[in-house]
Image (cartoon, rainbow over the protein chains, first blue to last red):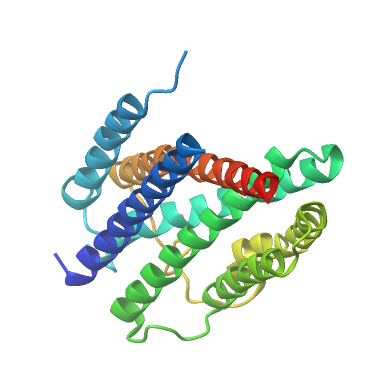
Amino acid sequence: MPIQVYQVLGLYFVGTIGYIAWVWRANADLDKKLAKE
Amino acid sequence: MEFRDDVYLGITGVIVALAAYFALYIAPAEVTMGELVRIFYFHLPPAIICYVSLLVSVSTGLLYIRTKNYKYDALSESGALLGLVYGLITLISGAIWANATWGVYWNWDPRETTTLILWFAYIGYFLLRMSIENPERRASSAAVFNTLAFMTVPLSYLSFILWPSLHPKLGDESGGLGLTGTMVQALVMNIMGGLFVFGYVLKKTYDRRIKLDEVKSRMMEEM
């Protein structure tokens, strides 16, 4: 399998999972702030 | 019924894993492009999701103008943000594919160029949002700008019909991608998996924006 196939697969999956992780964390931080106030 | 993150993500994970397996191991190689055609299964879905996301963004922006309900503005901003994320994935994966098949990462092909214009149009959308403090003016101006920026979506989609382009076309026998049965199955599965993920991240991005607004309004009340 050409390396470029894995590069694109990696980009797609890491990009998507990275975004999910960021949005999860942002939501969790905001939940904490809202619970404190 | 309550939305269950774990159930939704579990189903999505199974679809995405099956789709990736199909694309990498079940679908056959293409006659002219060989194994490189497998890039297509991970390049087209983010491109479609980018367009869908921007369609959600412009539609809800127009709904905001009509109703002045901030929830539509929040959804519009979330759609535009995801359009940028998926647009970037599309541009980079396209450049990798271009280098593998044409020998250069970027050659100002109409599809590449118009998609880059689309991406910068939505960077402009966020710059506009950041430059206006009044929430009502920000939401209205952003919705109007969004309507103009969205014109880059059909431009990007139709670019390889409007101008001569090297970009592969589906079902085109003269140098394009002629997909067979299993290839179509792999493509549809990857698009479905991608749309399931998109549904989840759109909801979470929207939730974040609503919570952010609430935190800001509480801070304003305290001041």
